[in-house]
Length: 68
Image 1 (cartoon, rainbow, N blue to C red):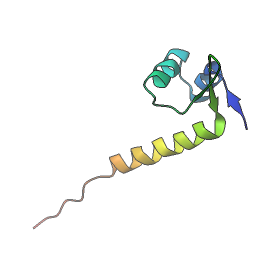
Image 2 (image 1 turned 90 degrees about the vertical axis):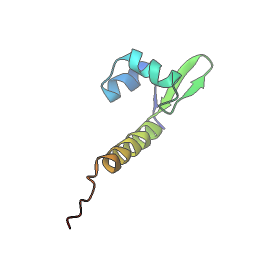
Image 3 (image 1 turned 180 degrees about the horizontal axis):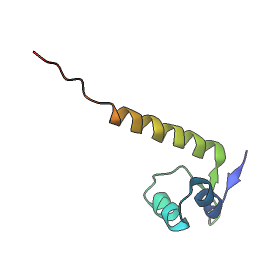
Image 4 (image 1 turned 180 degrees about the vertical axis):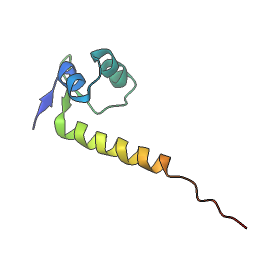
């Protein structure tokens, strides 16, 4: 299992470390703590990304309009 630090996760997701810390604080991203360090599982991050993509697609589906 690949493990990421905050810096690794930020680089992997293409965001700054402050964004990762905010997402951790707000419990928006899967993580775990190893003593005082915040760690991420690559598999959990990849799964979270797929879930985010699926939720985004479902929200963007256009409403069906019916014409009389």
